[in-house]
Image: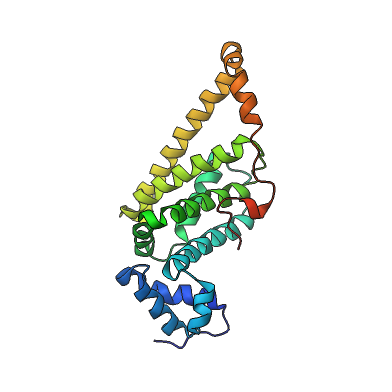
Length: 229
C-alpha cells in the first residue's frame, strides 16, 4: 500500500481510501474505519467531516461525481447539439466519472434502506439539478421542479440499466438513455399541443394559473440537493 498523499484535502483522501473497500464491505462502518486507517486522516477529523460515517461518506462520493461532471460541462462546447443530446451527454458523462460500478451498486443498497431513502432521493435530485444548472436552465416556476423530477426519473432508470449492462462501451445503456429522453420529449410535445389548442387551453386555464404561482427556490442554498463543488 502506498503512503497517503497528505497534501490532498482530508475529505478526498477519505473518499479515495474508502473506494478500495466498498466493493467488499459496502458503505459500512467497516469501510469507514478502514478509510480512516488508510488515509492517515485523524479519526476525530474524519468524524467531524462525516458525522454519520459511511452514509455521509457515500453522499460525498456522489456529490464529487456531480462536481466532476459539472466541471467537464463547463469546459465543453455543446452548442451544436440538439438540447436533448446535451442532456444525454451530461447523463453519460456523469456515469463515466464512476471508477467502479460496484461502489454505485453498494450505494444503491445503502439508500434503498428506509432509514436512508430520503438521502438517496436527495442525491438523485441533486444530480438532476446539477445537469439542468450547467445546461443553463433559468426556469423559475413549476417547470423548475418538473424538469428536475423528470430528469431524476430518467437518470435513475438509466443507472439501473447501466449497472447490468455488459455491452461494449456501454452501447446498450446509451441507446436506453436515448429512448428514455425520447419518451420525455414526446410528453413535452403533447403538453405543447394542449397549450396551443383553444379548447384545452380554456380547460387548463385555472390549473395553470395556480401552477404559475409556484416559484423555484430563490437562493442557491435553498435548492433541494444542490451540489456545490
